[in-house]
Amino acid sequence: MRRLAPFLLAAVMTSTAAAQDLAADAAAVRDRAMADRTAWDIAESLTSEVGARPVGTSAMTRARDWASAKLTALGFENVRVEPFTTKAWIRGDERAEIVGPWPQRLAILGLGGSAPTPKGGLSAEIVVFRTYQAMLDQPPGALKGKIAVVTQAMPRTQDASGYGATNAQRFQGPTEAARRGAAGYLVRSLSTDDTRLPHTGMGGWPGIPAAALSTPDAELLERLAARGQPVIVRLEMNSRVIPQAPAWNVSGEIRGSERPDEVIVVGGHLDSWDPGTGAIDDAAGIAITTAAAKLAGADRPKRTIRVVMWGSEEQGGASEAYAKAHAEEIGRMVVVGESDLGSGRIWRASLPAGGLDHPAMRAFAAAVTPLGVMIARTPPQHPGSDLQATAAAGAPFIQFGQDASRYFDLHHSADDTLDKIDPEDLAQCAAVWASFLRVVANSEVDFRALGKAGAP
Image (tube, rainbow, N blue to C red; front, side, top):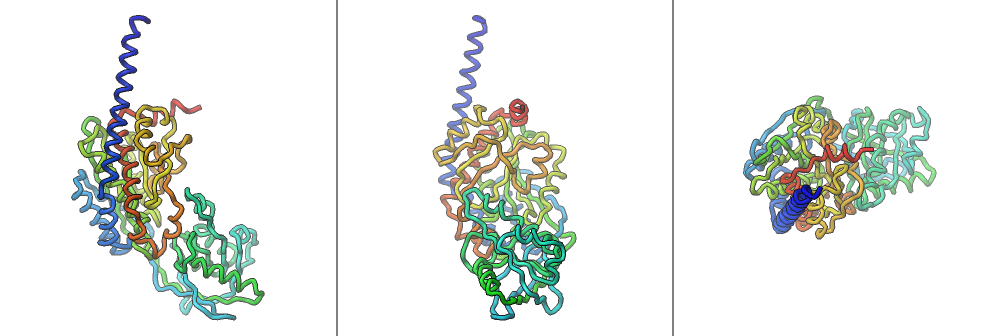
């Protein structure tokens, strides 16, 4: 043992020195990112030059070309455009109004997957439910010929848990209303604002007309229904569906200098809904991860960093397409992560199981703690919509919690525009991601092995 002691001491000292080097390197990248405008420039470029980017439209084709050109201009290698097809819902003219007993217009946005109304529109009595559960409690046939209206409000939270708690009333509500015989479905927007701007989103493919109401109009229908007289609403919606719409996942890499086959995959989604310009959802995520990768890869780290701009998150399809196209290399993916919660500052980092005490992750924590980031004691719960299939196939994933306190004031609405992004907050997000990428790309951290070691 006395003979081994010097070697053990040397190994410990070497490991400590390596961790200190990683921490210093990550801090330097962090500081550069905080002063860098690349993330802002990317977000400005995408929202200004392309604007809204729904799948199945010519704007999505322009977004594909923008993505390829932008990655190339920023110096990424192996820029790839990977085509796939997916079902796409296209909005047409929409109108909603109370026709009796007190006529007035309503502010709506059709939900993705909504059926169009019959020619000439749909007029029917509404049935208002103040909670989603109250509608679910209705037996089959109870809503026959009626327009079901759910007015349950979404709570404001920092971590987006309010959205998770109420999402079913938008995504599954139309299907559940149809099962109970409803001719149409209206839902209070999943929103925390008080403006008359409705917020869209997917509503499934239920076969009945379905739309989101602005929050004041949802409250209006509540008040009118409480008066006891039948309230008649007329809907006119002219959407259409493209069964096999073209879409694309676009990616670029900074190839690793020593272990190029070990890949870190990060990104955001390129598509958006149509009312605004897709700034916080998700030009911000694309800007954050692309800028972070460029900063972290400034002098070619050991492992490869890949940025992906997924082509159909809002209506689905990109996750499965990406996992299928990259099935053979998922085992070589070191870690994956998606930025898709706007541009609010990162306040929490959730690391893969077993990673907390690894020297590389301690170096990362040291770099981002001054930015106000807390390292969670529990592993991440969700990899991001576009990485679900990849994570399910075994890729370790990270999750950075952003301040979502204001995100749902803007999400999926006409207010999702560039002016809502704070450049300093955006830079903080890029700095956290860049620090993480730098540490992982230049270390030996193996999240798969750490996860297995920590498993019961």
